[in-house]
Image (tube, rainbow, N blue to C red; front, side, top):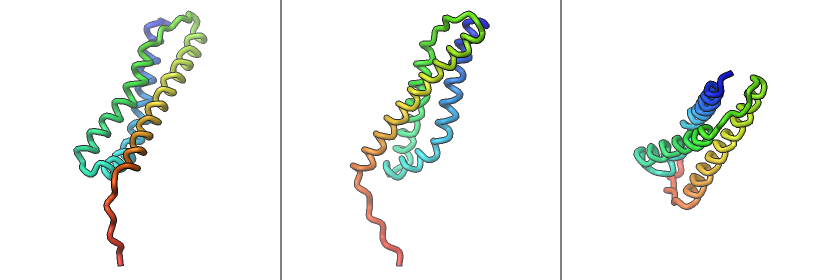
Length: 117
């Protein structure tokens, strides 16, 4: 397998996996951000910011991949190893976004809802 093709496979897999995961959590994150931010515009900004962070960090790490193996089996396991690292960076970014939202949720005062009678 060509080294350039293995590089492209690893980068495309990273982008695809992170994009699928971001698409999965986007509606839930958006609901929380609309509740916390108070306006759609603010929530939209933080949703876009989170999406960029969650796809950008793993993509940057994926671009640092330099294949060294020559056999197909070695390249497969090298790609799997790199995907593991880039997905770990995705989880790190996700935890950072979660911590930021959690801190924001604790500090922002909430309006008291009227009780239904």
